[in-house]
Amino acid sequence: MPRRFRSAYAIVLLLSLCPVVGHAAQVSVAVAANFTAPMQKIAAEFERDTGHKAQLAFGATGKFYAQIRNGAPFELLLAADETTPAKLEEEGAAVAGSRFTYAIGRLVLWSAQVGVVDDKGEVLRRGTFAHLSIANPKTAPYGAAAMEVLRKLGLADPLAAKLVTGENIAQAHQFVASGNAELGFVALSQVWADGRLTSGSIWQVPADLHAPLRQDAIILAAGRDKPAARALADYLRGPKAVAIIRSYGYGL
Image (tube, rainbow, N blue to C red; front, top):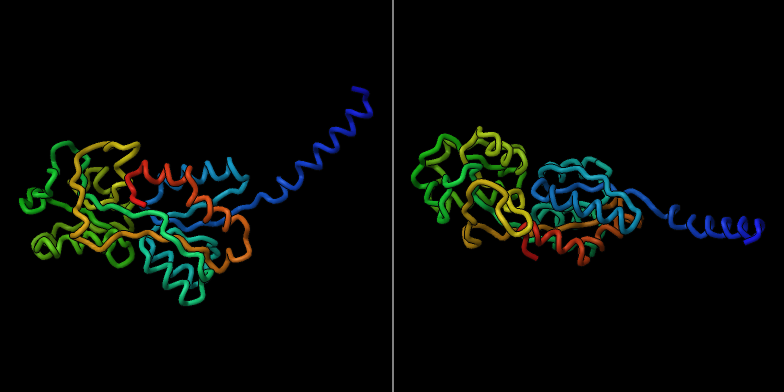
């Protein structure tokens, strides 16, 4: 190919790539702590497939609500419940009609040690442990669900002195993983991957012992005109993200 044609071809190729690079953007996402591992995988695939980058912050849904109402510039919220996104939508702090359920969470009682937790959760009644870890029920939906389970089992008062409260579900899990608590209520996604338990022993809490852990996402006011926020919301409902979500034990 003559040099002048090669040069022209290079210019055309460069110009054709410019719109793709120019449209790549970043979206700031507040993510419920229980969804840390799957969201990290989803964000990597999202960036690979779209060019957009997701900047992730993980924490308790209740704390994110307070931060958002105080002006935190998050553009998308992935909550651990359905109540918080609905409330933000009603208050005008989120884009009306953008709310959807991205996962159904599952609560489990977990010990890092094999054989400590039986498959019926009877270890709770035996009380042969010093500490039971839960997330803060005031700010973390999984913590609220854990307290609901204890109340329904009639164990909230008998076990009150043994409770160790983490700021969020990630810290509740860390208390058990580090051995500071023999067992604790955590999200199945934290101890489950690719269809199997990653370590220790669990009791999968029956769904009728607590309110459903419907986890909703919503585009926040700061993301209203941000294509990357809309793109990630759509991506979460696509086949690649759904497969990742299911692999961590979530329902859909």
